[in-house]
Length: 74
View 1 (cartoon, rainbow, N blue to C red):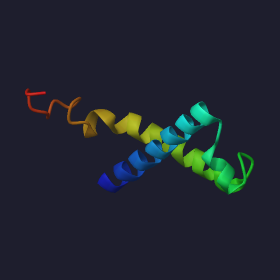
View 2 (cartoon, rainbow, N blue to C red; view 1 turned 45 degrees about the vertical axis):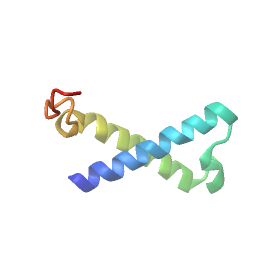
View 3 (cartoon, rainbow, N blue to C red; view 1 turned 90 degrees about the vertical axis):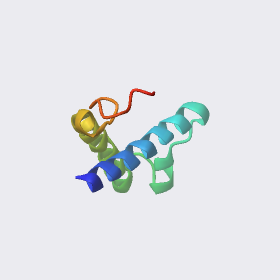
């Protein structure tokens, strides 16, 4: 389960950075793979979206802050 969490986390970070680039300079990382209509770009977009769903579904269990596992010094 930890491996799924790490892969999901990395894909969500990649997706977030992509949206940052789109918002700031209008450049989509998917353009490197042939644009939004290319099969590989669509696969990456689907994987990033599914990763977000996985993280939302497992957040409460995996998050130390939300699960109450953090020390009270924060």
